[in-house]
Amino acid sequence: MNHEGYVPIRTRLAIEDLEFLAEARTELLRFTELGLRLLDLHQPRDAGGITSDTAHPILRCRSCMWRWPCPTFRAMSESFGASRDLPESA
Figure 1 (tube, rainbow, N blue to C red):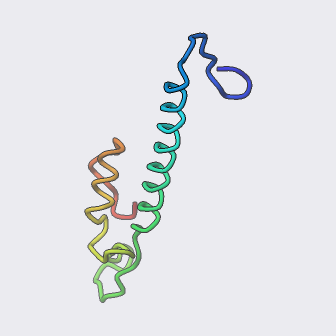
Figure 2 (tube, rainbow, N blue to C red; figure 1 turned 180 degrees about the horizontal axis):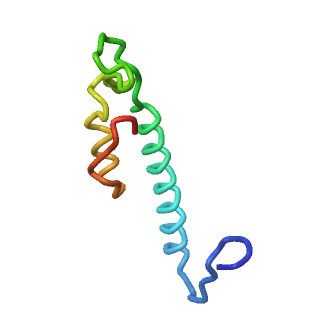
């Protein structure tokens, strides 16, 4: 990797190859942005109910209102390789 953050390639590429790589990079950036936006939507919030454990209130997802961690967050967390044992305040 050079000082500008690029890996120099010494292979001659056809214009079609370069177009494919540029499009793949753009699609990967869009997909990453989508994942970040989904994670931003699915965050915990206090459910606001009466609880006997005031130190650890019941949390719900602020987007889908499922109990935290919600199925969307769990699925994304598992596919990104995070531990299956999520803490209640994650």
